[in-house]
Structure formats: structure tokens, C-alpha cells
Image (cartoon, rainbow, N blue to C red; front, top):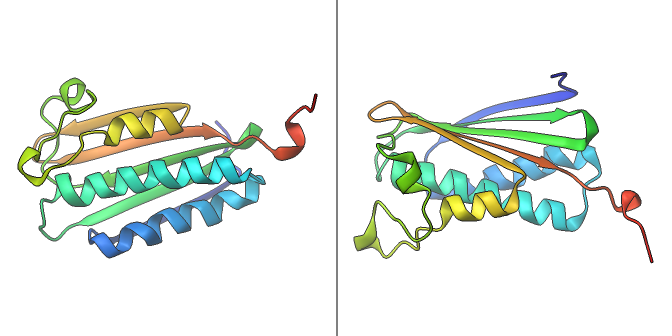
Length: 149
């Protein structure tokens, strides 16, 4: 598929960088003239994915989070977020609502559920000991495309 524009970035897997990641992705997405609701959805999904890398992927160890953002035709945004952390052994189980790999930390276990609900397509690939890649796509609905009654 043809890419209209692309951004690649890596940064340390530190909790203070989560807000940077969501702001950067939304600023880049602004080229698509998204609605405020689109940006809020995207911000939430990116925040969840980056937080998963930091909290679950690296478990408070040093590491790097990578983000690739592509603007595609028809106002679609593609976001890939990667880590080289511990990986996920059972992806279907990890994607179940309320499942958490860190129950002692009182995590809600809703990260993947939130990502799914705020994007049009979500895929997760992971290999234990190698890391995880989360890929999300979302069509940005332009305010001018909405019909009024």
C-alpha cells in the first residue's frame, strides 16, 4: 500500500516518555485533518501500547520502544509499536479482558481491549524472549465528511 508520509522514532522505555509518544503520533496524524474524537482515540490506543512495552515488556529494565507511523491513502493511520522485551507466550490469553501478567501490581488487564476499541484493526505479534510488536490502523474521519441531519 502506498504511504503518503512516514515517521520512525525510538526512545528509552521510561514511563515519562509515554506522553511524548502519544503526543508525537497525534501531532503527525494532524496532517490527516482528524476530528478531536479521532485524536483522543488514537492518543489512548498509543498510550496503552507504549505503557504495555514499558510495564510488561521490560518489567522495569532498560530497553527501547520503537514507533513507526504511516499516513496511508483514504485518511488511514498505521501505527506500529515495538519492544525487545520479554515477549508474550500466549497472545490470545493476554488479549482477554481483565487478564494481566502483573496481577500483584493491580493492573486492570484492559490494555489490548482498549486498543481494540479505539482502532479499526489491531494485531499483536510476539516471541518470548524477543519482544512484541503491536500494529494498529485507524481511519481518521474528517469533520467535513460527516453528514448533518
